[in-house]
Image 1 (cartoon, protein in one colour):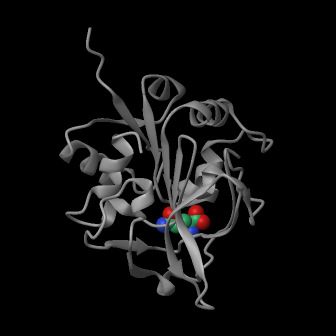
Image 2 (spheres, protein in one colour; image 1 turned 60 degrees about the vertical axis):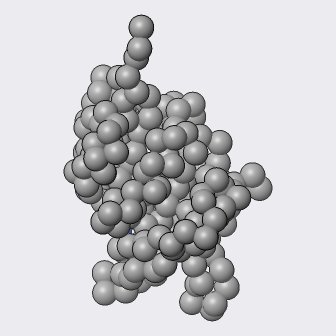
Length: 206
Ligand code: GLN
C-alpha cells in the first residue's frame, strides 16, 4: 500500500495560506492544522510566521499552562520534520526573550523577538544557501524577506547554520538553522515568489 505523505501547516493564525500554496505547487499534499486530530494525520509540519504571543494564546489554558495542542506539537517536533518560519521559529525555540511567549522548547536556540526593530525595519536580503547542507553550489542567492523578524542570539553546540546575514556590527549571524529533524528560519520563504528551494529541500527530508 502506498501511503501519501501529508505536510501540515499550523493554521491557528498568521501566514499559513501562502505556505499551503507553495506546498501544493510543488505537488505535496498540504493540510491546515487547527486541532490535535489534524496534527495526528500529518507526517511533517510547518509553523508559519504570525505573532508568537497570539499563537501562545491558542496554545495555553486560562491559567497560562501549556494546553494539549501545545504538548502534542512538542511531541511531534521531537520526532518528525518541522520547519518554523519567523514566529514559527520563536515557537520552536528553547529560549525567547519575551515571557509572554510559551515556546515548545525543542530547538536549542535563544531568540529575541522583533530583534531587528519595528515593521519599518523589515528588509529583504540575498542569502547564500550553505552547500554543505546539500544546496547546489553556485546557484542564485535566495531573496529572503524579513518582517519584524526575530534574531538568533545563540545556538546549541550541534545546531547547523544553513544561512547567515551580516548583523548591525557587520558580524555574521545565523538566520536559518537546523538541528536533527527541526529547521528554523527567521524569515518568510513562502513570500519569495518563484523560488521554492527551501520548501523543496524541507520536503526532501533536508
Ligand atoms: N514579530 C513577530 C513575533 O514576535 C514575528 C513576525 C513574523 O512572523 N513575521 O511573533
